[in-house]
Length: 252
Ligand code: PGA
Image (cartoon, rainbow, N blue to C red; front, side, top):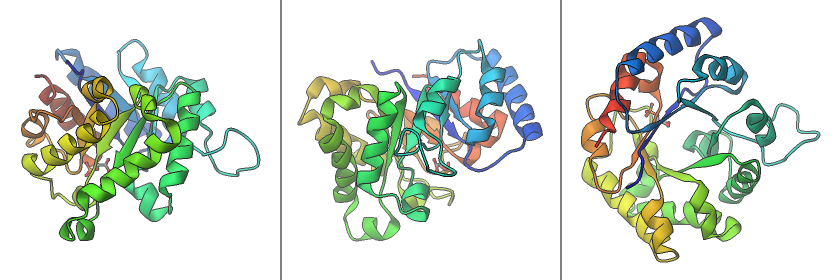
């Protein structure tokens, strides 16, 4: 049995006040729920201490949205994975499509970040996913395999023992378009199969999250698919009620 994971990716949103309100709302929503999922919040880096303080003792985890490919040194503006670990983050999102597309992060750079993050005992949430154009060209699985194999080849398949994979079709992120449960399940099964060809028990344990316009209204159908182990939630994670409902939808 894989414990589901629901992670909120707040992206570059919020203020001290709005984050305070969101956390208070979330805590009161979640208090009355019995959740099976591991719940993670991934705020902008500068707000991580505020979030960590507010969630102390609640069982909610906190992760970064990105980390540097270097440990320390002359890298102005970067956040070292060691900083995230030092403050008490347990996870870090790596290879989000916004990092790949807007900041031109390559598969090999993401693999370097993955290795460094794990060296700091952070659990990477490795994002993979195809663009609309790639899906139309029937390249979905080639793209997702290439993105995953870049990490497996660099870090070794065993590294997936302390990692989460998030399948996020780029065309579904922030667009309101969601992959159908069948579309998502197909890719999730293919990801698990790719890992199974290398290590069956690792594949059985690997949590593979779906991301891309997950809402309170579609979460349960997606999460009930055999190979979908929860979600990476963008827009809907900024609303306490919606996010709490999505966390609850991960109960089997
Ligand atoms: P969305 O974002 O839920 O707003 O589509 C998901 C993500 O980018 O992780």
